[in-house]
Length: 68
Image 1 (tube, rainbow, N blue to C red):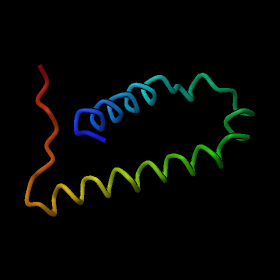
Image 2: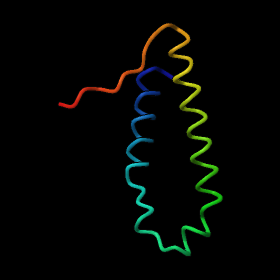
Image 3: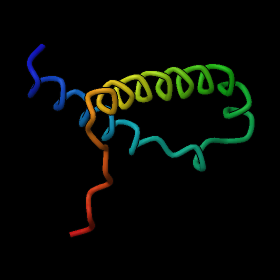
Image 4: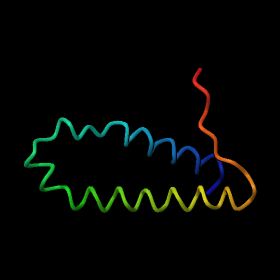
């Protein structure tokens, strides 16, 4: 996968996550989905940490963009 494709896929993932609004889910639905949601969020955290650690291992910093 090219660098541009990888970044485009990461951007698409951010957009998809931005569409998730658990406040609109009923308590019953959230309770039913909590195990699966937790597993997905933990997997996402693990993979993002691996990517960030790989960048830092190369001596670079990950900085939050300044607001426009």
